Amino acid sequence: MIKNGSDHIAMLRDGREVYLDGKRVTDVTTHPAFRNSIRSYANLYDFQARPENAAKMTFQPDGVDRSVSRIWQLPTSYAELVERRQMLEAWSELHYGFMGRSPDHVASCISGMFMGIDVFEAADPARAGALRDYYRYARDNDLFLTYVIVNPQANQSKTAHEQEDKYLAVGIVDQDAEGITVRGAKMLATSGIMANEVFCSCIQPLREGDEMYALSFAVPMNTRGLKVMSRKSYEANATSVFDNPLASRYDENDAVLYFDDVKVPWERIFVAGDIGLCARQFHATPAHVYQNYQCQVRLMVKLRFLVGLALKITEINGTNGFPQVREMLGQLCAEAGMVEAFVCGMEAKGRVVNGYYVPDRSMLYGSQVLTQQLYAKVLNSLRELAGGGMIMLPSSIEDFANPMLVQIIEKTQKSPACSSEDRVKFFKLAWDAVGSEFASRHNQYEMFYAGATFVTKGHAYRTYDWASASGLVDQMLGSYSLRDELAALPRAA
Ligand SMILES: Cc1cc2nc3c(=O)[nH]c(=O)nc-3n(C[C@H](O)[C@H](O)[C@H](O)COP(=O)(O)OP(=O)(O)OC[C@H]3O[C@@H](n4cnc5c(N)ncnc54)[C@H](O)[C@@H]3O)c2cc1C
Image (cartoon, rainbow, N blue to C red; front, side):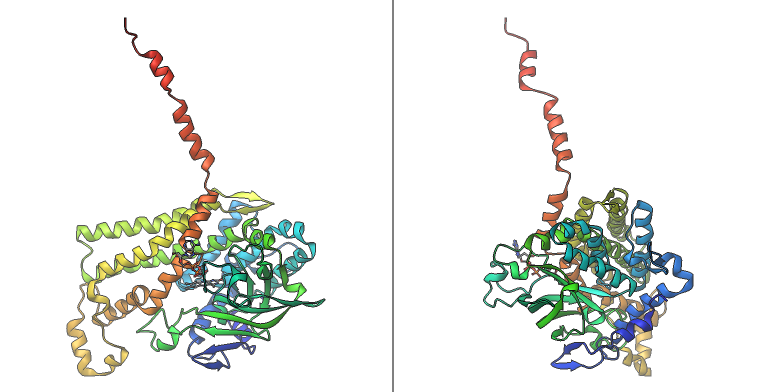
């Protein structure tokens, strides 16, 4: 049977060591800081388990006697890539693009690594074997994986081993026949509290002397010694869905992970001490492209949703007929359309590598660079369209329990398009998408989830088709010359 929502919720009752507000959380699935968001993830699994969605959401891998989630599919053609994307899109629509680290994200990364298994084989067949087995295990059990691939900020001008504390970032303490022991922290595990397992590695450049941080492994979230420190929960403070329709249900959470001498068995270790392989696992395999392609598919859906909010703001305020407002909406349509075009473009311009169909890298990184800048701009456009409407709101649903206040709400919340109640309902949603603490975290997320802009611009620079660009310039320069022009000048008698 394909995994459903109840299966996923049951899997999270595993004794994981999660801390919030100074206390240990005994059951994340019932805790008011996490339960609704966990339910939102469970909804994804329920959706894929519905018989009527089977064709869209699942596929049958070669050599497996049942269907599994398409998040683990390894496309070999353009058509298969598009089929898989339609599945990712359907999931994104269920959370409106607000759950950045939904299970399809890290599944895309691990699938991409599996597509590039030769890279691991060339370095160490034993580690390649571990990765191959892990991919199949995660796929067949439809595991929800999160990842931690960035070290905590400290002194950014120093490399990992130069930090004051040698075990600030996760590093090897010891190793024996069974595996390695690791100690230290990773910056953030988005959705970690809601996932089954964590893939821990380092995507940041490592230098000579950093070998102990060149790691790549996966462990269950309830592994002994793994401490999970939740950031402030927006869900906990969003006690009413009507007041905070997004924060109350889609707060995927971000948590610092501390590995307190965690023992990792060799069968879960894909890189141990090899700086070159640690970088190549992302960039010499399709992993980095696949994981970030998933992000662009999700963002495409999110922008579609935000553009829908923009239109509704103008309809509710009766401003949609003003030419300047239409112009702003047109700009937003173009921006959302650009991301959709990038997704279609990176698919169409993809190519077969090692037997697998991989989206175009240059287009992907181009899209990432531009969307890191675009997201804040889109939010700002919504602010501009909305004016004070997102603030001129009853403090909470409690106001609707007071008949006198209801009368005032009805008198003051006016719209040519809807009732007072619907106006309040809509603008509470708009604020949660644009201006609440939840919304603000999303702005930070879209700016940084794939690295700071100097990193993504570096990828764009590295993968651009410079030969073609320079070739055009050379062709132009070759089409004329000073000597020819001088020779053609009329000679003085
Ligand atoms: C909401 C959120 C969720 C996240 N979720 C995850 C997750 O699930 N898993 C995970 O592994 N990571 C996650 N991250 C971490 C994310 O990958 C990092 O934030 C990102 O890689 C940037 O690294 P940093 O935060 O250390 O910023 P830095 O690298 O310190 O960059 C911050 C700024 O410092 C300057 N700067 C720093 N170094 C340089 C340099 N060498 N050259 C020029 N300028 C420089 C730039 O101005 C840059 O914008 C998340 C981050 C956020 C904000």
